[in-house]
Image (cartoon, rainbow, N blue to C red; front, top):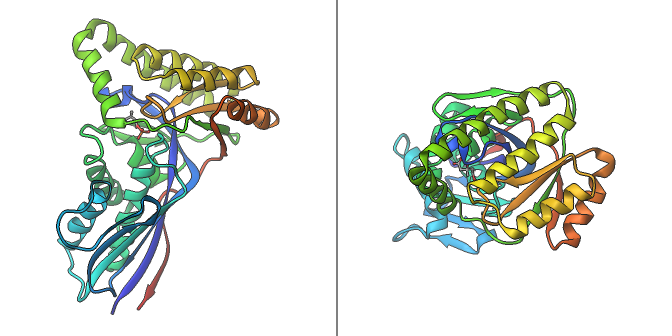
Length: 320
Ligand code: PMV
């Protein structure tokens, strides 16, 4: 019997510790209420992958276009276990801007693993969804820390360390975060390489700086647990300074960040890989609109996000 399964997974913002997390330091990340949706169906003839947002379709012949390669990999992995009678069609849509540092590729990968698994009658647990999504992330950039697929899979706010896993960080308050998109794309792989290259050339300078980033994350997690937004905001500002030091900010990001701080944000920094993409501003609810307006006036696209608690989830499975 053919099955149609729909799954979704949230995008994320990195609150602290991006880049340093690639080098073994902890990072603090929050899943956000913007989701990627992937539908998988075993009723169609042959194999097919569609991403209408990207205007791309692969019809099962030849190599999949590069942006669809992670979905193809997940398809292949899950088909190793069970082969459907007819075929497998996969369709991905997302409310997350791609390559903006909001984790759209990891969210698509986590939702795809879950929905393809369900269409093939496998209820994949979260640890398997994470492993598969991490493997798919390796096609996007060679050395992913795993923080994106982890937070997309488990949801909430997590402190994550490469190779060790995560702890959930419970906050006694709702965080109000305004995201500012620079409207230009940040290429994660080349930004990660740039930081690696700096670390290779100046290890005595860079390694202590990465450690400082790790300590900063531990302090930020503590501030969050205590609901101390002012302290958290200050730490976000310091974190942005460290990210400037490793060369991943841009003039546009800095403009949006300073505009947000001037408009009353408790703290603001770039989020994700940098080189474009997004910044985040931590605000009191009462200041959020003013901060969003300031970001827009500077030419950014502002978006207020909330925490998503749930992570990856199966929306529905139907026979036929
Ligand atoms: O996917 P992005 O652009 O949010 O970047 C992820 C964060 C990095 O630390 C830069 C890379 C990684 O794999 O952790």
